[in-house]
Amino acid sequence: MIDEGAPFHTGDILADRYRVEHMLGRGAMGFVLAVMDLQRQEQRAIKLLAGAALAREATVERFFREARALGQLTSEHAVRVFGAGLLEGGRPYLVMERLEGADLSTVVKRRGVLPAHEAARYVLEACEALSEAHAHGIVHRDLKPHNLFLARREGAPPCIKVLDFGLSGQVLTDPDDPRLTLSDEVLGSPAYMSPEQILSARSADARSDVWSLGVVLYQLVTAKLPFASADAVEMVRLVRRETPAPPSTHRAGLPLAFDGVVMRCLEKDPALRYASTAALAEALGPFVRGVAPASQTPTPTPAPTPAPPSRRLPLAIAIAIAVAVGLALAAAALATLRG
Image (cartoon, rainbow, N blue to C red; front, side, top):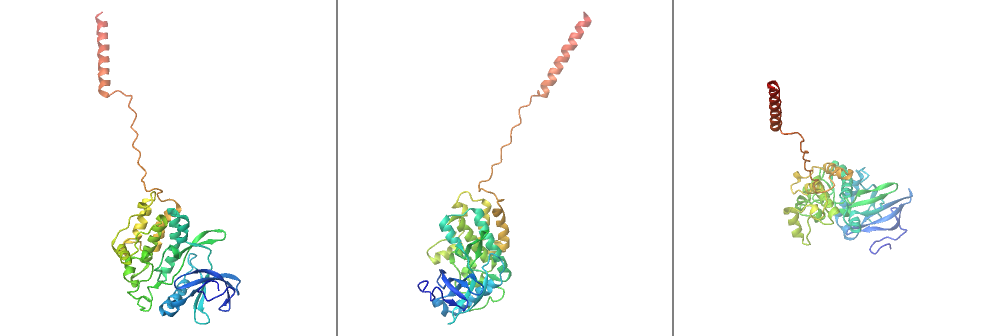
């Protein structure tokens, strides 16, 4: 077996087409295998449900929901899906492009805080995929650094791929499906969830994804969460009631304008946030292009340079001298006439 708990061996053939190579990763509900597509001779990744997740109808439906959601997206920042189905025995699988690189959670652990322009670029790229998803009525609902993958590309800079649409909601087409969005069920990661999503998964819309991206931005440039508590009840209270300190509080030198973008994402009232991820991307553009203010300290306005002292005599003195000279000349002329 390639990993303890994974019911496959290296060399196994799945769906009569995919040869197992090794484990790429695993989570609470499943795992991802590196495979070779024997028909096309191309590397792929297969995502499979595992263990107790297989017994939950809603979990299986969310798994196929991810396949449907990703199948609608064409953005280079969304993971491409090549197929989905059931293995022999009924285990669901999803065939995706294989990515090389690391998620942003790992990037921050390795490197520490990121420059504002780099964090802005990564989130802007995520916005591109999410804007397309939102246009299809798909809300991600579980955005966090772990689900934003910095993928290496041959002959091109690395780019962000948005992962794990398994909790996504088709808010325009099935908001009332009780099997998938129970109002008392918490879907997502609380530290990244908007106040309205914490109260009800059905309340999440595109602006909830904007909130989550604001939390991600905050974390990328400070290595801290805007709301943090080990106690779940306290976490909910912080998210719903407290205003976090701006990112520059934790890291000197961040532009005030960057603070403004992050804090607008984290407005409690969805109506006060950016109305869309496209609007957020537009706000991040100046930071990516390097035309936003580079420092949070305003550039002091130089004091006006005093004019050099005038070499001209004051008018009153000039008049007095002229009068005196005139009188002197008149007196001299009079004396000459008398002589």
